Length: 206
Image (cartoon, rainbow, N blue to C red; front, top):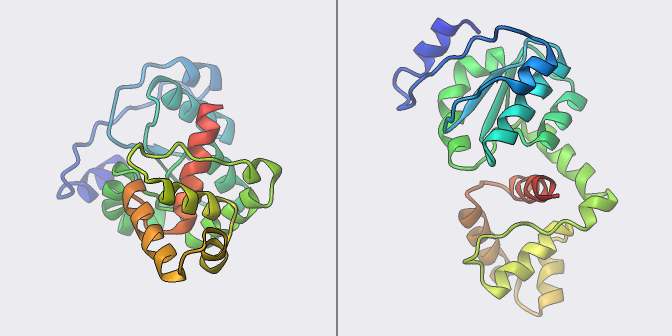
């Protein structure tokens, strides 16, 4: 996507565009370049995957918790998984970006995700079936109640509402209420987003 079109897309978004042209596409150079602080970073992934990974790693190393959107031509599912593991919050191809970027930016800026639903669901499934996924415990907001933490633990074990209700000896309706509160507190829209956010926070911490 050319920079002029990028600027046009964001003209009414409330976001100020600060562009950074890369002088080198070599991974070591991208690893060490100076990166300014921003509310959201939009990275054009037209470069080699290793170069993109180096740039993303640099941003995350220098700005802990940075919100990242990657825009590219086409993404294989394995590429999307690698980006999500690294901490990327949004994935868009160029055609999608022309329409969706103005909506994706505020969502990602507020801690949410903008990832194709099928990619997100399959990635979360792959997390939950792994040994690491079974040990996930999110870095929870401090204002979570004891019951909300119990419900969150159930979600991170991929339990259905009915199974969580049975474990905690509460009604399924009460579980749904707590799930809604959890989504609101973590600033995400879907269970898959919540699981992925907890996974990324755990990965960043360890």
